[in-house]
Length: 277
Image 1 (tube, helix red, strand yellow):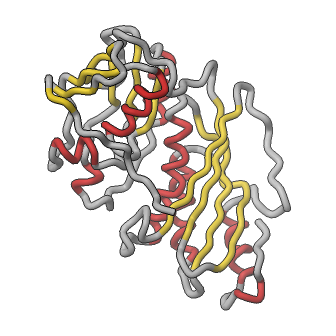
Image 2 (spheres, rainbow, N blue to C red; image 1 turned 90 degrees about the vertical axis):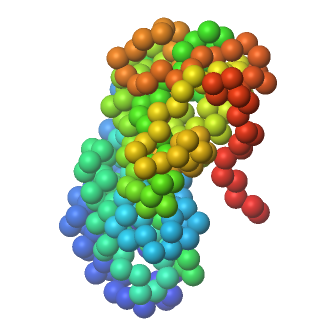
Image 3 (cartoon, rainbow, N blue to C red; image 1 turned 60 degrees about the horizontal axis):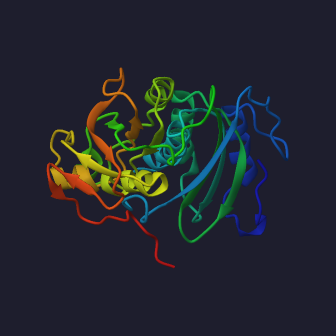
């Protein structure tokens, strides 16, 4: 883990890197050396910006945890398992980076994906960027495989993140994603932007519509939060069978790509969170 912009640092950068090397045994060289996976290689990357993707007062440990988990969730959404993490932190001078890496380390251990490198630099805004590698035992599940007549499932109740003000610690559904792929899932996505938006991505990519019969709502949440709140990181997937050993069945795919209803009523258009540039 080599850091740049050394003259901009106000704290002892190399001491921090030394502490990180004690915590993450696989870092230290210009590039990480890892064993290639036996199956397809999955790659994902995402950034968490304080005040944009999180409340500004979210504890730093929770920001570090979230930065890892949102990336692991992308691997889970393909039916895969995470392998390695690269973590880059850009932070204002004086930020307690050890607290951020407490959260990173906890998530790394929880999902069995070691930190193998990254970068440190200063910035006016706190940004934690994670890149993750993963693998899958067989063919990855994409968003484009759903077909007319297939059932729609979700791995858990929705809306809890929005009900908490997006302070609830997210969890990546890796085991559920592997199980769904093994049970015959044809298309899958994680609920990061909200059920309507993310299921809409599957419908768009697969050329189908959908009818929802019911949506499981988390305790304390509203139906609106379950449909559009986002950041629950449950998995939504389709399969050609009416019963599976994983998830709750919530609806059916239809032939009409414009059909998107819940209990007979049209769902609101929802494109999900969009950054404005």
